Image 1 (spheres, rainbow, N blue to C red):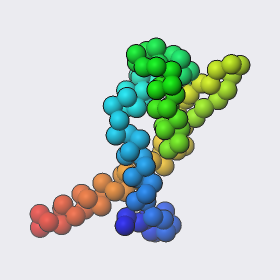
Image 2 (spheres, rainbow, N blue to C red):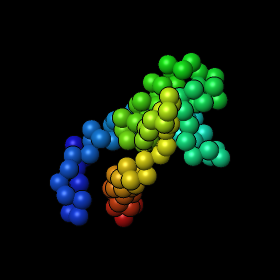
Image 3 (tube, one colour):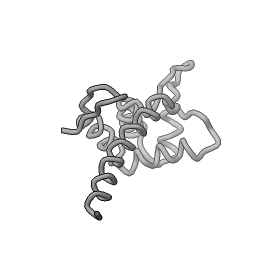
Length: 114
């Protein structure tokens, strides 16, 4: 089991990283993230995402829900629509966890070269 100690406190990251990687392990969700990150719009509704990606509204909604569950996206209701934006604080935490994981891997690789 992967865990963090020191400044991050005792925390088991295995399950958190598993859920994050599962969410990122789908091409449609990666395209959704990329579309939101590279587009001119700061937010998208389910209908906009479905139309842009050629998905049904329920399929787009399910993908957005998964990204919301792992806190990559925030959802905010405005009128009759729910709009999705990036959750910057959660993204920073995800980045720290991934950086920690890869830091451990690179540390081990560097030890092996000696």
